[in-house]
Image (tube, rainbow, N blue to C red; front, side, top):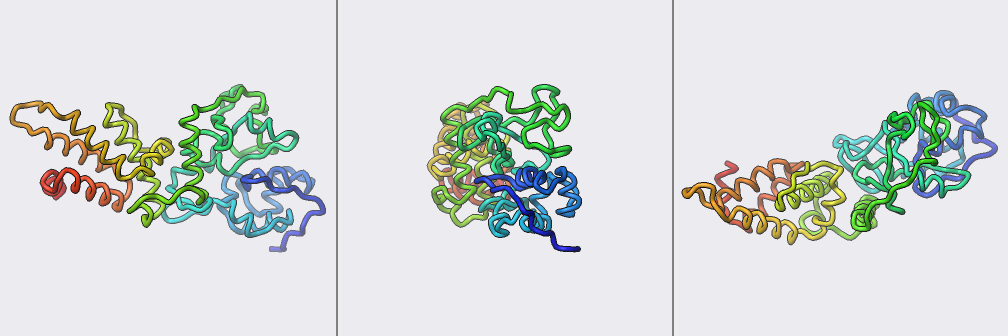
Length: 309
């Protein structure tokens, strides 16, 4: 396969710009459509999966005259457990490959050269971490899901060609924006070190811990949410407060279970059963062990030891 020749003119990749966005903006300088650039120049068939293909990324770097190491830092590398993105390995459901999420207001602020951000592909981030603008993944005009097919501009709907910059931007509350920024900082390796034992845990376990802590904290106050990636930003605040956040939650559950349902039932037994049921939802074996060890230390081995055997 012949090596691609560097174009006479190129684009300058923007900070945190996704590889798909760079390819879309580069295509006009090669006098081709985005699909033709993919097929002829990059020898790749899908814009959505472009960040996962090292060979195609290397060809894109040579075409545009980009630094290959810097471009690799924008990749989304598949792993056995999920994806490697930024400085972390995250679960597979944390990354959106096929769906294109946008912040219309941010695209407007880009001026004449709108670009798509890598951070917008992280499902746990429901907003742009710089501005707090809510990310959208559906066209308000035709209600189609925004994808990477039939793409020549990052800001248009691939079905009806609606300009997403005409959408009215919405922003999250200051509290939720702060949580999203904490999560983003963790992912890029710029956040504070996680407390023991999560400072030595693998990234997947830490990610699942965020999901689970958000779930158990809400459960303790009578709310029911799922331990999913979409709640991870809520959970990272609790993870940074470990073990205090977990201990406080255990106390809350004990207090809510103070009155036995039947005279023969001990409150601690019923609350322990509720906690055990919750820990079953822990996302990795290591996380399960960390939670069980801490709960046993706080509530006693008799409440948990036999129950798990």
